[in-house]
Length: 121
Image 1 (cartoon, rainbow, N blue to C red):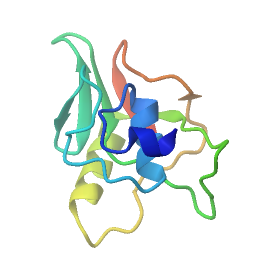
Image 2: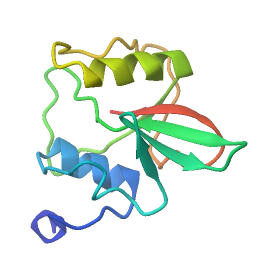
Image 3: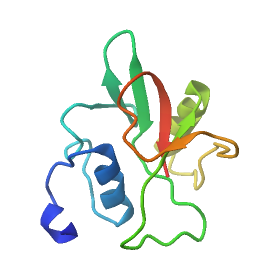
Image 4: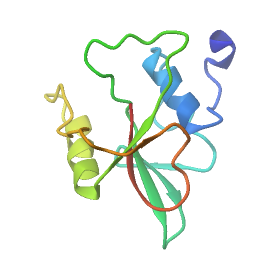
């Protein structure tokens, strides 16, 4: 199934990041789900009042191996942490994101409703 999806637009953020973590080149916002916009290394959802932001790079935890049963989760981060992560992604000298995931809220579904900032792990 993975090979069938190669080069096609992702149906969800979860699928987008799973493919990214498996090594598929996802382009510069070309294969993202239809309902989001890529701005400064973050996907944006929602209207003018309630916006959701998700960093455009999935985080691979140290020593983690992506396998057939691996799943992406989304971790809630502050807007300040998102801004720090965006700056780190834009800087080729950064090897790690400056975000502490300890005691953060996580979910398995796409965070496309409400508001806030998220990181795919």
